[in-house]
Image 1 (tube, rainbow, N blue to C red):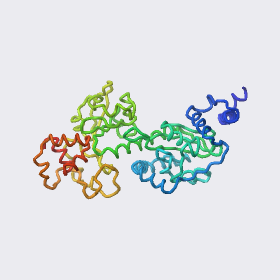
Image 2 (image 1 turned 180 degrees about the vertical axis):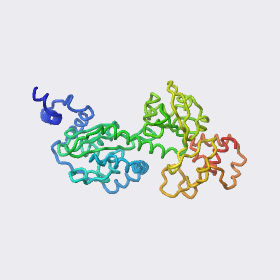
Image 3 (image 1 turned 45 degrees about the vertical axis):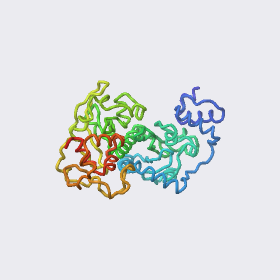
Image 4 (image 1 turned 45 degrees about the horizontal axis):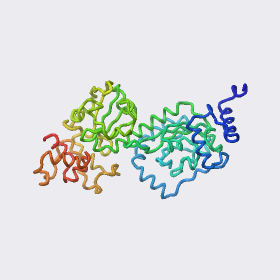
Length: 408
């Protein structure tokens, strides 16, 4: 026992591996429960821990499908990738993004002189699922949806014991796993808190992804400190036109004392959690945060916005006059480039300009000119609060619907 006590962590881990794989002794205290459970699943699949593994990509068609299907996630990753690469530069670490199944769809630069595994592993289409590569951080997160670190010999296959990994989940507006962000270091253990860093950037990517799917939702940002509103530490909620909370990020869930993506989200009204009506929230200033009180008693600073289609500018909240600098920009919805919302018009040419000021527009169809607010309310209800869908159904612009709701 003396030698065990004075041995290094690597020696203790090696001893635990030997006893587990050769003698069946549980590695209690030597590895985390997440790693042990992964080892057990790999054993049940008859994987040989001493076997050689190859980082082979999936088929070209499957890799292309993964890129296409997850283009919004990849766009969110690309918006953060340069900063991640710069932050990690001197640490000799790399980052990669996988889809929910573990297929790699993005990675930072590789090819440092000491790296042998990383350049081969960080290729588009490589499958990091537990079934293929055994116990790895991205593989465990893809399997369980929970953040994890897998260091050196904790990897199931001994041939990749030089790797050190930390991964965190990224979730969509339904609370489902949308992807996995992973940090890795080859031949060198992390000399910083990798779990915190990967969690921070996973949150940043997740927030961008949530906003990219929220064109028709009022997005509420809130935190106990106003200095955190423009950081990954901001709580975010998407609220539809009926005042129902459609989604919330993990920070918002923690502030509210609930779970992100839980079953209650779909039936909660914003009045119940922020003690403020939808109309009041929609009229909050775009820049100066307002003080609100949560139903649990916490006082928070909050701002609201309608995310713009190109994710560069906020669409003005209902009831607010347009600042001149923004009102003159009518290109927010007509800007060229890939469309980031699959629920919008199939024909890009039919997209109306964002009505931030009072731009001229075609004459209103008779079907709406003679209608009143009841027709608009009924159509919005039929479209589950989706303003774009209601506008298409009534053959008018979204801005016209917003003005009619206000009684303009």
